[in-house]
Length: 589
Image 1 (cartoon, one colour):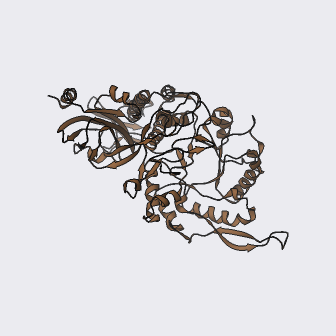
Image 2 (image 1 turned 45 degrees about the vertical axis):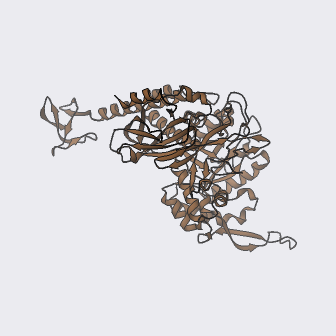
Image 3 (image 1 turned 60 degrees about the vertical axis):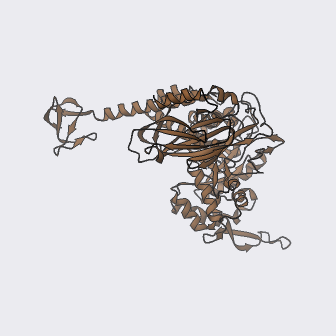
């Protein structure tokens, strides 16, 4: 009897239940277990892409579960055990977008090898699948066998991976703030140099670029200068330059930079401390040396995240800072906005005094982009970049990124980014833990609860591990970034297909799908559409137009005089075409 159907039969006669979930389903209610069944796993990939699925087990007694994959699948999979975090108080809510009402929620993903002892109850496992850039197979089929002891139960789930031989090339830009002190605090016995890099690389492996805090860049005071009016009653002011030999707890600055550059990252965020309010003459030398140094190191985009949610009283300083950045450096001024405080954007943000905008990269909150869509489209047309950011709950209609909000809200954000041509995103923390977040994820800002805000990684020290623990939210954000690249590919291949598919999921900031199954199915449909369009494109490239006595001839197969098949780029010369199994010589005029 087929093992899959044998499983169905066995499940009717024992107290254990095994079931499968897609990557957007999160177990917060036992009703989901009741209606869930086991299904064969079929996933769709480009190369350099991740997908995920979940296997759940409802067991009425303690047991040991062991997973065994067929040999051809093992190199592609990682297994995690889902840890449930208690929800002490639900997150703040407004309007349409609501947190899930639950006592506990799975989020930390504890890595395991192939087996684990599990307690009585409901246990969920996350399976991460990655297809490398050089994968040559188009279909990989196998199965996962599940053995439960001491109950001596065995189940088998078929798995099929469909792979399109096109590389997913990340283009979406991210700047997720990396906090170094919480890591050091939670891993007191670890080498600071190594542990910070492990966290950094965990973020990079999810296609997220953290801010450059592991570089720990700081200016160096080089001399003391008296203030311009020579007032002896006031202390002298320092002048700064860049010191590339300084050593910090995370390593020598130059070594840290080479580490960063070795990750093939072209974008780097440099903390220039604009908001400290120092006079510009103190910083000019620092900025000039700093900008030149990073440019020579091959960084094509150097960013200063200079202001966060400024108010109108800060606009003069933003304008002055931007003027000097633009005059003395090639550093871009990135500013995060949560409000413009008027119906018209302040002129000080639009002109730094030289006619150039004071802001190179506009980062509005989701809701602000909704209210000022036309303005941001205008800035984009002027050659400036528009990114986005989200934090907390300040509106009633945009997707939320908090722990106890539905997972799809993180992923659908990237469909909206594609719709509005948003190039990147800022998020205020990937590791900003304010307490033992395994036992209490509460984050309180302005007397409101924002569960899980400010962190997407957990500390492994909780389980005796000297490494970071990824979250389910981080995995879903990664999948959203990959969706963004799918949409970009489809837009370039066939704009009408792009519009048709994206509008099934995302139509506006206040009009988007919260149906998990719909997004998964649309992603599959998009994969199939891309596959067919690429096939059609390659076929058309093989059809070359050549001329003989001014007569245009269309040939499926064209060869040069050496017998090499020519797919494109026909130049003047002698060619042969194959027609009805015979070769004909053609001279292109």
